[in-house]
Amino acid sequence: MKRSSIVIAGGGSTYTPEIILMLLDNLDRFPISQIKLYDNDYERQKIVADACEIIIREQAPDIKFLATTDPEEGFTDIDFVMAHIRVGKYEMRDFDEKIPLRNGLVGQETCGPGGIAYGFRSITGVMELVEYMEKYSPNAWMLNYSNPAAIVAEAIRKVKPDSRVLNICDMPIDIEERMAYIAGLNSRKEMDVRYYGLNHFGWWCDIRDKEGNDLMPVIKEYVLEHGYNLESIGKEPRLNDPDWLKTYRFASELYKTDPSVLPSTYLKYYLYPDHAVEESDPDYTRVDLIREGREKRVFEECRRIKECETAKDTTLEIGVHASFIVDLARAIAFNTHERMLLIVENKGAVENLPLTAMVEIPCIVGSNGPEPMVIGEIPWFQKGLIEQQHAVEKLVVEAYFEHSYQKLWQALILSKTMKDADLAKTVLDQLIEANKDFWPELT
Ligand code: NAD
Ligand code: G6P
Ligand code: MN
Image 1 (tube, rainbow, N blue to C red):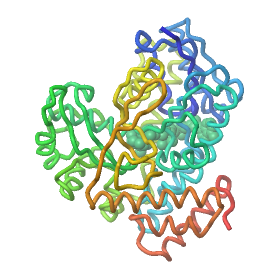
Image 2: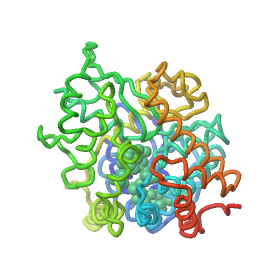
Image 3: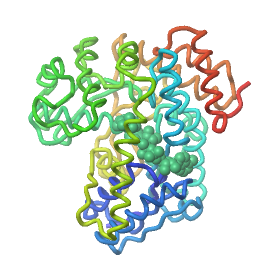
């Protein structure tokens, strides 16, 4: 079996260790010759890299490992770029969440004004990675988790339509794992799903087991009462994060808006923005919880591994986030034709949405990339919501490339999370000020 060479871009991410552990766990089905970490923050990446070096040395000493901040070194001789950068890091996520919230609006990493602000930073960083890949390893594939995935995907479609970049999200995967438990199965891999929408803006319209039995009724019955929260069946894996528990439970409300389908949890920011604002504290947002939770936990464990010079007793865990990206790389490397949800150009797959929309739909994935599955016509409710959000994303990307204040203001006005145009302007001006080191200058 061919051995792949991988660079993880955003090597200093809190998700890097679990991806490495997952890769090491799957060497029999996805062999690897080399793993590199690339980041533009040497100090941050070093914390993670020191631990990863020890983990790899102990589990697979024949895999070459290096960590670098030099693009040429990072991107040369690569088959896969696994990208998860956060341009501006948590310092800037703080503004994305708190500026809108202080104005009474949804303050979220990928949705509403915060997502738009993050998108404006992220396009620059991700496009840079695409250019490095095309320069130093033109045959490689980039599997991109960097958020906001919808906006990043649209930017790449617009200016580099032929690039080998696949944009992905772990949210549907995470929810499908929950659905599998609800239906009494062991894994999402025991189901076939049909799903459509934009990233963080979608619905499942069909879920079956491998014998073709319809699982929607049993899942719906559960979701109506508990959402996707698994506490009542004792299967909740994220017990230490109260935000997510609430978000999963709230899916029951989202479900009631259209009981013919099953919703993505992110719809709460668009369908119930007032609720989302009410349950938030503008002085202590998700980023604060993550810095005291995930970041602290992962980085402390990395430092402990380095200190002990061993990872034999590590508490680092592998989640669905890592499993999805490894499955995807494997599908491309070995032409497995696995069915996976990806963010791809519509091109008619959803009949009544624009041809150039970047939709999230099931695709069959092989060595030549994804082959999207036909979804057909979707109902008015979803079509209306999607088209509004899709126009927001198109306007953000046009605003970025044209340096247009007007279009960015329109994008904010059009977001379903926004109340009125004056407020949109106020928030935009505050975001411009906070992002002045990252955004192109707007005229
Ligand atoms: P993090 O801040 O811990 O890590 C991001 C890393 O990216 C940092 O080390 C930072 O220095 C680096 N970075 C920033 N700009 C860079 C650039 N231009 N070039 C190279 N490196 C750069 O963030 P995190 O919380 O671990 O999340 C990482 C990313 O993954 C975020 O974009 C997050 O939204 C995304 N994510 C996406 C999904 C999904 O479903 N698509 C799931 C989880 C995380
Ligand atoms: C989900 C989403 C991601 C998001 C992640 C982390 O998995 O799909 O896009 O980045 O949650 O969110 P958090 O708020 O925990 O950083
Ligand atoms: Mn996501």
